[in-house]
Amino acid sequence: MSEKPEHFIIDGKRLDGRRRDELRPIKIELSPLDRADGSCYLEWGRNKVVAAVYGPRELHPRHRQNMTGAVVQCRYNMASFSVDERIRPGPSRRSVEISKVIRQAFEHVVFTKFFPKTAIDIYIEVLRADAGTRTAGINAASLALADAGIPMRGLVSACAVGKVDGEIVLDLMKEEDNFGDADVPVAMTSDNRITLLQMDGRMTTEEFYKALELAKTGCTTVYELQRQALVEKYDNEYQAEGGLDE
Amino acid sequence: MSSGDNTVMAEVQRDHLFNLVLKGERADGRAFDEFREITIETDAIDTADGSAMVTLGDTKLLVGIKVQPGEPFSDTPDKGVIIVNIELIPLASPDYEAGPPREGAIEIARVVDRGIRESKSIDLTKLCITEGEKVWIIFVDIHVLNNGGNIVDAASMGAIAALLNTTIPAARHDLGEDTPLPVRDIPLAVTTIEFGGEMMLDPSLDEEKIASTSLIVATNTDGSISGMQKLGAEPLMIDQVMRVIGMAQTAASDIRKKFLEV
Image (cartoon, rainbow over all chains, first blue to last red; front, side, top):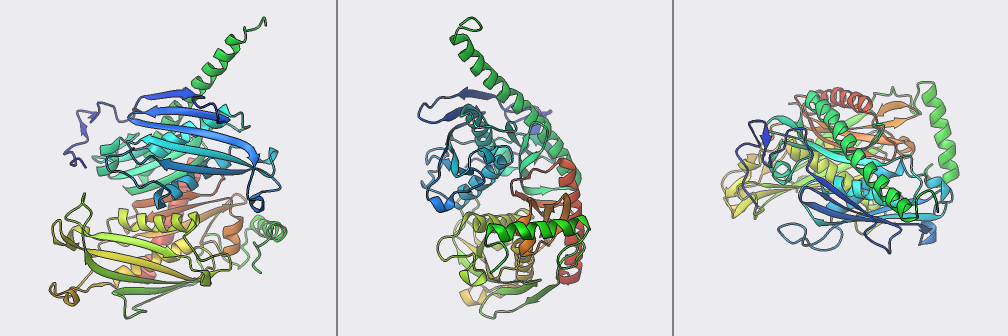
């Protein structure tokens, strides 16, 4: 692993040239996979993730079925080659925890009650990791759900905030995540309801409040990009159908 | 049979507790910000290098610590290692089964672990024996004996109480004299549940089952935050989160004063 940098912020610029409140560049591609009911490929800085959604489909084993609504399931997985040192394939304690919190980030927005006895499966594969894979995964999964036509209250948007050199910054990159003082992944709806919140590191209450406010603006920016991607996709399909005069 | 075992009972229980909340009450008569009775007994197991038995209402758990020399991680060659593990053994609840840990157990173990690790409460650089070769490894094993709800808070109290009680067994390994473990802060995790629009501390088993969402906040002696995890599907607003942080800080400072400060 690389060495801890002496400073994370020099002349108001971070190691990769960003401002404190700037996100890494995000690139979104909708429906890259045709077997899945919905899918999304997302690049976020040097992260590359792909999310697929299957369902609503019959849930097996049957004793896990819920008579009053769909069961949302999520599997977050990192490819063995996605980081410097190879990860042993299969679930780890970390990936099991992340899968659970991601699932819960969506349980509030998905209208599960329309699909009793079914499963809605969210699969997230991290192909290349560079800090913030769970938030990248959530943003991709949110679009994959929309792409699958699953009825939702709205999109979920996520980003991380953290503390480096005693300052609150948006969207930690790898060095900042590894050697920084705190990391706070947040997911929220477009009306700022928090559906995922974790924190490790150390912060004062004031810093934490500042971090949440910064996360709010970060999530809003992400939301706009997600929305744009969806509009573009449906606009293209609409044009391909011949627009108004079909 | 516990009340959450089937959906009809769960619904009845939920309605009952909801009606109580509307009147500003809880089933066991506590205030919303009141903990159940806490006892912490350290030195409970003499074969461990540090230990604590905690009761929190009906919840009972035992934390045992073993300190052994071992290899450091390659990215931190000059630092000791701390490993926190929670065993939800089938003895503790009819809901637990033998076998590999489920996601819920993994999650709470990792949350308690992060609370202690991120607070930097243990000075890991002082646990280095030979850089790159040998460091002290601290195993914090939490055995839940009776799940009466809110295992996280009980585990967090037990873990830090046991760490404060831990001796590094250097003599046993021919590495000099035994010394107390260098603990420089007392992090505590406090769980708050949201139910019926109210925030409540220290959920009982029934309350935990009906909670819409809960937020675990780990805080340190100076009030700073060293860990946080939201559980459950219902969302929270920023002002709710900030309120919960305040409740957690007050509760943690109370518990610290009563049970953990020497």
